[in-house]
Amino acid sequence: MLFRSIVLCTLAACSYLKSEEGSQSGTHRVLQFENEHVRVWKTVIMPNQPLKMHRHDSARVVVGLKGGKLTKIEETGETSILNFETGKAYWLNEDPPRTRHADINESNEPIEVMVIEMKA
Image 1 (cartoon, rainbow, N blue to C red):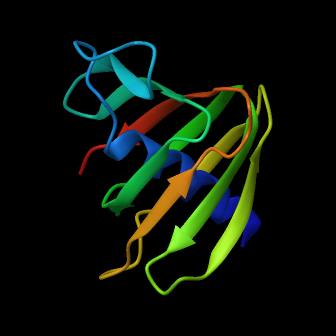
Image 2 (cartoon, rainbow, N blue to C red):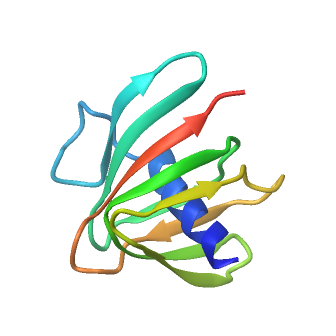
C-alpha cells in the first residue's frame, strides 16, 4: 500500500506542474525524452507547494533523485505520508477509475524525481 502510494504521489506531482518555459524557481517539470513507447520527465516539487486534484491514466516508473516526504490527499479526504528515498525506483500502475488525489511537499527541501511513463 505504501509503495503504491509513493509512486502515485510522485506521479501526481508531475501531472500539474509548470512547463519548462515556466519559472524554474517553483515546482516544475522538464521533458527529457519522448518516443512512441515512453515519455520521460524530471520533476522538482518545491516545499509547501500543493498540487491540484488529479489522476494518472498510465503506468510509470519513478526514480528518486532527491528524496523527501509528500502528503497525499485522496478525494475522499483520507491522507497518507509518502517517503521517497534518494536513488530508489518505484513502479506505479495507473490510478483506479474515477479516483483523484492531490499532493503537497510539506518539507523545507525540494523533492526531485525522474518519471518514465509508459504509453499505451
